[in-house]
Each structure stands twice: as structure tokens, then as C-alpha cells.
Length: 319
Image (cartoon, rainbow, N blue to C red; front, side, top):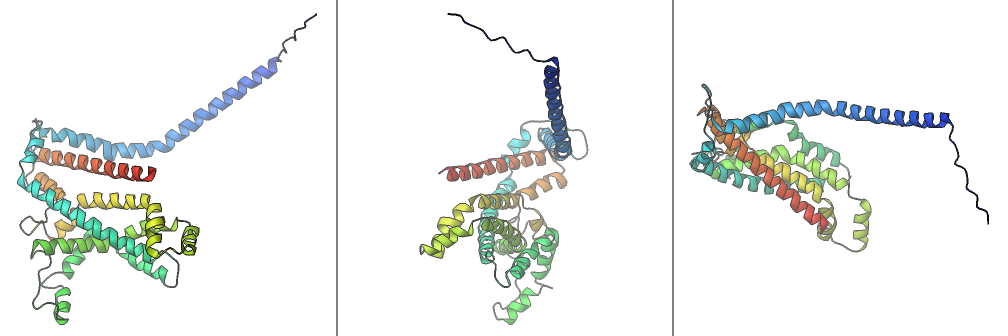
């Protein structure tokens, strides 16, 4: 029996050179894409590094020092952090900030979600309603605070005369600084008026992403509006709801403008937020180190809270 072996096919030198040139061109294209990607990302990375990372490192460094506004800083870690626990104003402000965050988040989300459901489906006049609800978001927050300060003023505001004319009150009421409850209610009303339309728009975007066929199938199966809301709308809207709640919670914990303009932290520091304490430490007591330490603690609380919210959402989605 005779066996034969096939001779290897010899490649022409031109084919090997062509394959090498193709590999070289592919490698060149990959490098150009990588360099183009770096070029596109470089401006954003520079802005983030310059405006976020560098100030963050500086704040952490300042929090480890006694850092007067005028004079040389001296290392005193961890005194700035331990002093926070003995600052009664910080404890009062932290409790008020938590209470304000809970009340504002519940009220603002309920109204925003209701408005989004109201303008979800196209019908005559719904475009006008969407625009009207969103218009307050176009007003600057400081400007909105000044508007409410004028409206609710017991001396020049129109609210008291209107309520007196309707017989709802017998005498002018100091809505802003007359009592802690009135100051909180006035601030929550301002924030709700200013941000309800903006959050409505975010929720409306999530609602419009839900397929209409699901609602039609539920209607054919005889589901009520409450069952449709509970079984279809809310589950499919959960990522959008999580985004809105994170934005609301973070904004409420960092509240400053509305209290600084409306109440100045009064009456009797009952509406002093944590951020107002940070500003007082820095620009009233001129202790930048203590202010920086409190800022770092607030940042850590926000990070933990956001991680918990996102983890809870992820577990619910997996279930």
C-alpha cells in the first residue's frame, strides 16, 4: 500500500506582504479610534477633574486642619470631626433637614406624579396644561424665593388680604417666621410650586415609554384604573421613580437658598438646614476646617443614601 502526502501549498510572497499590510492598517485604525475617543473624553475629564476632584481633595485636606479664613492652617485631625458631635446646632439642623426632606419628598412626589398622570394621554388642552405646569421651573430658585417672600409678607403681601376678604382669617398672619410650622409649610409650598412641573416632565417621559398595548390589554381584561396603575404603570416606571426620588432627596438634604432667603434659619434656628450651618461655620465663624469636615460628612451621607436607594431598586427589579 502506497501512501502519498500532500505537499504544502506555498504562499506567494505578495500574499504574506498583503496580509501584513492589512494587519498594520487595522492596527492603525484601532489606534486612531482610541486616540479619537481619548480626544472626545479629554475635555469632560479635565472639567470633572478641575471642578470636582481637585476641590474634593482640597476639602478633605482642609477638614483635617484648623483653617482660619486669615492665618496659617494647623493640622488638628480628627478634632474637626469630633467637634461635630458636640455641636448642638448641627444636631438641630440635621433633625430639621431630615424632617424637611421627608415632608418635601412625599408632597412633591405625590403632586408631580399626579400631574404626570393627568397629562399622560393626548387630548384637547393637554399641551397647554403641560406648559402651565412646567412654567415655574423656568423661574430661578432665588427669584422664586423672593416672589414667595413678597406674596407671604404680612405687611405688603396679597395673601393675607385675600384670606381676610374670604373670611378665612381674622388678622394678618406671619406665614414665614411666625411659627416653625408656618415656616416649614411656606418653604415646602415654595419648593413644590417650583419643582413639581420639572419632576412631572421626567415622570411623563417614563410614562410615555410604556407601550400603549399593555393598557389596551388590561382594559380588555377588565382591569380597573387602580389595578392598571398598580400592576403596569408603577412597576414599569420604577427606574424613573428612582431617579426622581434620588434627585428630590439629594436636593432636599442640600437645601439652602429657600431657607436663607425666606426664613434666615428662624424662628429660633428652627428652619436652619445643615448647609446653612456649613455656611455659618465658614463665613460667620471663619472656621473653614470645621465647615469642610461637615461638608465631607454630608457627602458621605449622600453617597450612602444613594447607594442604598439604587441597591433597593436593583433588588426589586431582579425579583
